[in-house]
Amino acid sequence: MFKNLKDILATDCEVVKFNAEQFFYPIFKNGRSSLTIYAGRNNLTLLKNKEISNLKKITVFLRSPEERFVSGVYTFFYFTNNQSIDENILKKIESFDIIDRHFIPQYLWLLHLHKYFKGIIEFKSVLELYNLIPNRDGPWTDNPNPWKTITQEEKNKILSINHKKYTDVDKKIIKKYMNRSVELEKLIREFKT
Image 1: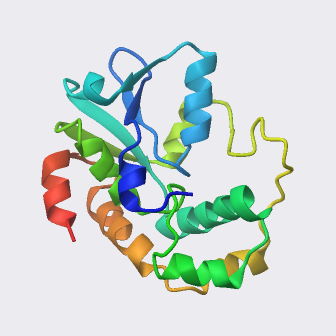
Image 2 (image 1 turned 180 degrees about the vertical axis):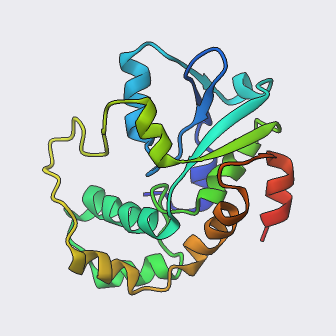
């Protein structure tokens, strides 16, 4: 868990060189574990920070904001609370007193990328990533703690908090730019809050 957004955005910015023409920016809860594990198993190059500044285009896989929020919060509880949904912690998530890389808006990950990359972003659905790689890894991969599938009751409990601050900007980005390309600089300015 990070204490504030600056801690999250201060982490390394990584892009996977999928092949000579395709570069993918992995966002947490958008196939990141699957993609980075696939990259490691297949000796794909992982570019970091200033190494990505000269790229022309990067593909970013986006996920339904509500689905990602639920999955991200549940993953947070997996790492911090044995997947037990705690109402008090949910209230702290709602008020932004607790933030985590697994459920911050996808827009903030684009802001993270923007530190080093000013070129073209191509947006695709995370479902398209799964057509490119065979594995379905996640935070449970190689983790000794057992993973249990989230129940509908747990999903409802997570969605019962006001999550608009986490999902609204991503909905707007998806509506306008899904399956399109845009200059990252333009997008950052357009959706800056």
